[in-house]
Image (cartoon, rainbow, N blue to C red; front, side, top):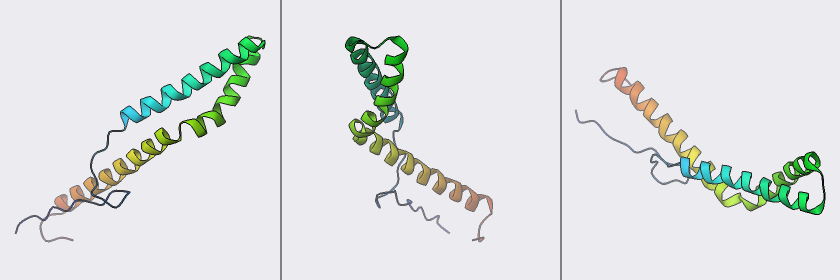
Length: 104
């Protein structure tokens, strides 16, 4: 009997493949840190002291990152979802091979 290789569907309906998540994760993380640093520097230039600038920079960077980094965040989420689908399919394939021939 020939083994039937089926490619599981990805989150977008196409075939699942091992996604590259690391570049998007690094881009999103660096973007968050960059937005925080830029806002903190602006607040220090306006005249806030060290700790107030850090606190308000952190608080203001959260909503700013939510809107400014949306494309990067969505690509990262898609990659993580595709990785989850691929891992689930590999796990099912391994279970099917371990259960032996003829078992379903």
